[in-house]
Length: 262
Image (cartoon, rainbow, N blue to C red; front, side):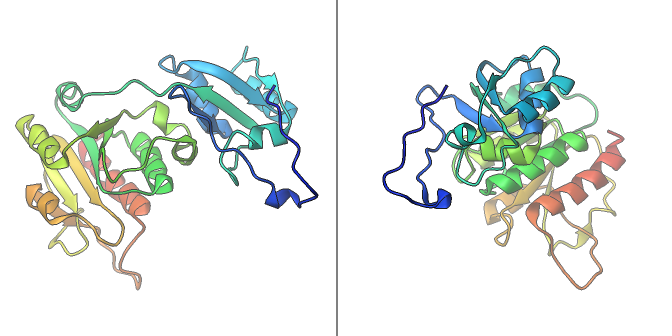
C-alpha cells in the first residue's frame, strides 16, 4: 500500500499537498471506471498495479470478471492521481501503449476509411473527447504533432472514456510532411474551416479521407490549410456561429461516417 505522510499542523483537507502521478519508469496512472476497464481489456497494455475502493471493485468485477484490485481508501488513490481528478475510486498503473507509424496506419486502410488529424489542439480534455467521437464514428486513427499537443496522461484517457484503447494515437515530427505522406497514400485531405465556402454536407468526396481540425480559436494554420485538398464548414444556421473543437469534430465525423458508410 502507498504510505501517506501526515501533514504538518492542522490544515483543511483541500489545503493538503497531494502528490502528482509518479512516472519514474515511463508508466502512468489511469483513473476512472471506463478508462481503467478498457485498459484492462486491452492485451497491448502492460499493467503494473490496480487499486480500487470496495464499491469500485464490485463494479469493476461485473465488467472485468477475475480482476483482483488492491483494496484502497479514496485518500490513497487521491495521492496518486492529479488533484481534483474524478477517479471514481479506481486507479491503474500501466505502461504506455505501443507507438504506431503513420506509414503503417496509412497502408492498413484500403477502400473507404477515415483518419483524423489535429493541428495544435493542446487541451487534453478536448483531445480525449475527440478520441471518444473518433471511436464512436469509426475513425481508424488520430494523428497529432509531437509538439503543441498534450501528453497522453490519465486526464486525457479519462476524457476519452476508454477510446484510447481502441483508436491508435499517432504522433508525427512534422505535420506538413505527415499530410504529404497521406496524400502519397491516396488520401483526400479535408480541413474544417468555419469560413470555407463548401459545407461538409455538400461534399461528394469519398474513399480514403483525412479530416483536419485546428486549434480552438486560431483554427487551421496557414500551411496546414494550404495542404488540404478541400476546406469545409459545418452548416450552422443558428445564432451561435461556432462550436468547441471537440463538438465540431463529433459533428464532422458523423457526417463523413455516413458518407463512407463506416
